[in-house]
Length: 277
Image (cartoon, rainbow, N blue to C red; front, top):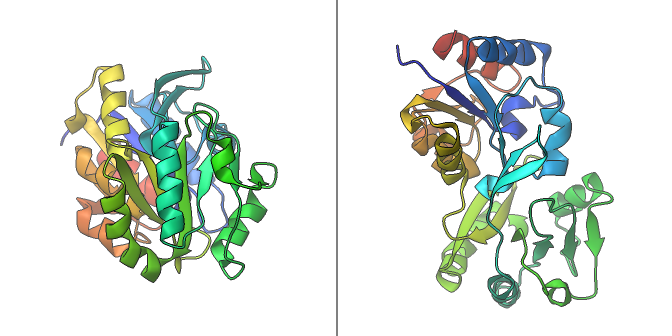
């Protein structure tokens, strides 16, 4: 069996069960992997602040891949090892193009912290966005015009809308913004909705994983990536072994080398038991 040296774990829909908890079985399995000499990290679309409470519960021993691969952060030393922000000119162009498509852009403050995000209008029937705002009290700020904030670079520009509409709009967004990466993620709060992020060209979880392996001095073939969503596709194809949860999207399952148990069945622990221990 291949000896794997790095395990990269998504958070939402992967490590977290439907009650938004990391189970004791998953924590114990991760500790066993670390004790076996394997690097274990998170590879997530979350920021430092929103990933922190999960990371603190886990015996992680490698820098974190955050913001969909735009940031690699050494939490022990509290320093960024790799940062890719969206230039203010590209972010401004993205906002205008999204408005032309009758979308409501969200602008995220620059990395590494990216603690706040801003919006100036929204669809009152967009249940997923309203839940997102509610869950991010303190981070979310309604402003008069998000373009007035773009004096500096941004972490990303994003929108949330119904999956069917996003599928129809995605080709136009990609055509209008060729110097960016357009990443889709089914909303973990309401699977009828899809979250779209616009980041610098080349930013992805897969490239974040690639950068981390170079920092650690290991080969991509020695990595396992575990995820469940559309924004995990690149990571799954980049890793030596791409694993998805039983609850993963059909697109993620089609990309995977192996399907483990669901996020409610300690699927991460099953991966560790089968491929590491």
